Amino acid sequence: MSTSQTLSQLVNITNSLDSGDPDMNPLE
Image (cartoon, rainbow, N blue to C red; front, side, top):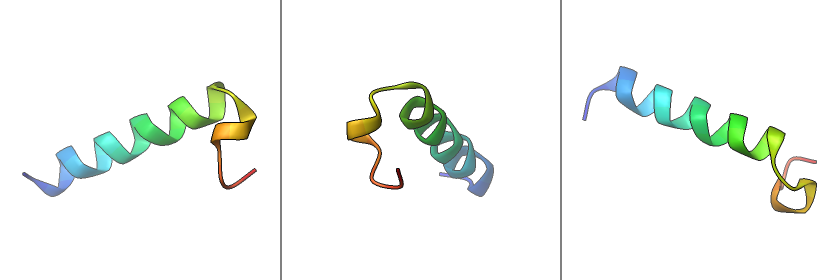
């Protein structure tokens, strides 16, 4: 797995948490 793919997945996960249920986001 390349670094760019890993970063893309991390961004996608972060975006999903931001737009999803706040209770599912440990940073909130």
